[in-house]
Amino acid sequence: VKGVKQVMTLSQSIFSRGIQEGLAEGEAKGRAKGITEGEAKNFIFSVKTLMKNTNKSKEEVLTMLGKTNQDYINALQVLSDNN
Image 1 (cartoon, rainbow, N blue to C red):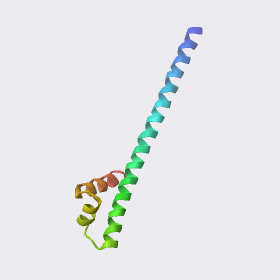
Image 2 (image 1 turned 180 degrees about the horizontal axis):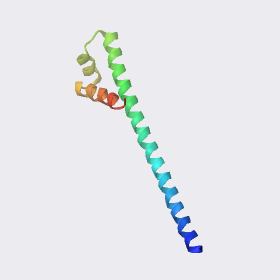
Image 3 (image 1 turned 90 degrees about the vertical axis):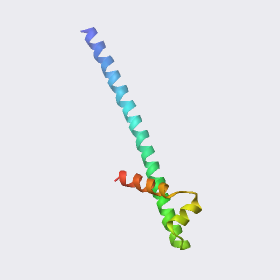
Image 4 (image 1 turned 180 degrees about the vertical axis):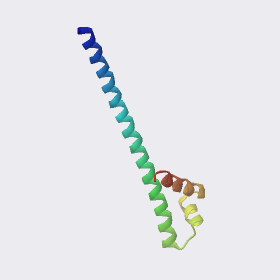
């Protein structure tokens, strides 16, 4: 009986540690995903706002920002992947 209790306690400890590690990993991934999505939204908003306020094309605004059309496409992709 004593040996069974020890094995059960060990199993519970391992299980609890696994749950804690899984939660920590999930939180870190969620945080990273949120940051990436926020950066993409900010970038798209900035480009659109600059286009409106400067009467410049998207390509001109991207050049001003030191970005490429592929950067813009990547940001749109991030946002579509998260919906």
